[in-house]
Image (cartoon, rainbow, N blue to C red; front, side):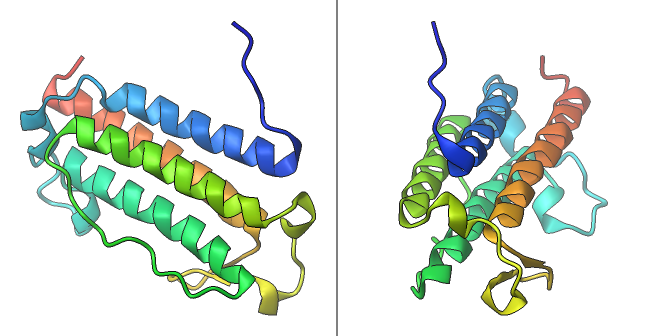
Length: 162
């Protein structure tokens, strides 16, 4: 079967984002609901990184945050959905699909020419202080998924999940 690729620079970013999320979904699919909520790192100072559940909650919330920040560059004042934990992997799989759909809909407002911006006043100021244009924010979003996928692979090893 031939893979259908989206077109243009936006299409490439969305394809890679979807691929990163698909890879993440494959990693978490075998996790049981008991393993989902197990505290794997009780010593971390980051509440988002104690369990598979807290990591996935953070990943989903961040995904909506990145897309909302991009959308609001058009002058909107959309607020990202509230952070909510799920009790099953099935719910997280659905939530991750929702992040892709939401992000794809956001990009319906933009063209490839909108991706790069050199004027800092027209860029996204992230909550952690970094300033990004749209392309940089999506590149960050992709790598964010990849880093947490790696972290989840390590958590699965600690839990003995195959």
